[in-house]
View (tube, rainbow, N blue to C red):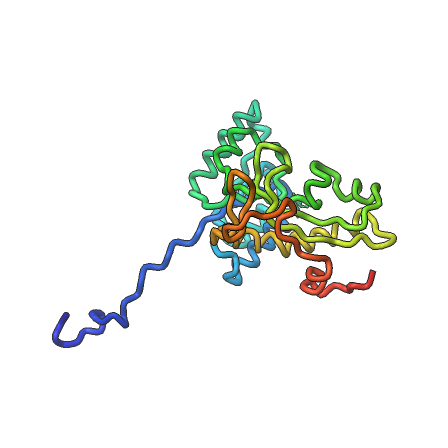
Amino acid sequence: MSETGDPSDTLQDFTPEPAEARRVVVLISGNGSNLQALIDEQHHDRLGGEIVAVISNQPDAHGLKRARDAGIDAVALPHREYDSREAYDGALIKVIERHEPDLVVLAGFMRILTPRFVQRFLGRLINIHPSLLPAYQGLNTHARALADGVAEHGCSVHFVTEELDGGPVLLQAVVEVAEGETEESLKEKVHAREHLIYPIAVKWCLEGRLQFADDGARFDGTPLPAQGLRMSHADAAEELDEDQEL
Ligand code: GRF
């Protein structure tokens, strides 16, 4: 230590190296409203990491513009330029790995993934699906739920496994189906809940609170039930400042 008492020698002035931000890569195909919800949380320092790249298989996806506007690396990787699903996913793996992600987030990425892709990112690959899984896997979830006359619908965040929309559920948000509900109004309500729970799920994955295990998902080390953690209609409605009258 210098005798002049150089402040740089004192512990008080010691600045630890900042921990490296956890890295997130987001895959999209379209509008990217869920991506926007993640970007907004990041801007408020609430995401628990940094979105380092957004990749779209559709070059004209609006989500790519959202990424560019936020100063995030936006990559178009058109699937039409590849002969097979395997070839495309191989190229996609390479682009993703260049960004060294801790977490890969599917946000409206409208592609069926090859087993090789899923295995590569297993445990750090999540998706959001517009239904209360395991109900309504696949497409047209809102129309199917309405046709069945269900009282409750919603959305789920889940780890991606080789079974389409079948991986362990992390978080769900419930929507009560109102009288006279239309496909459009239901979609809108579910979307608002997607924007609530996806950033939370991403944060908890980045913090290691949500983890993938052989027997399902865990939250703070405790195995989660099949429906994951659930946000009720009332809680979400309050959070969103929605009129709760049904
Ligand atoms: C969402 O409804 C999500 O559940 C599904 O794809 C849609 C993407 O919407 N996986 P957006 O592009 O985030 O607006």
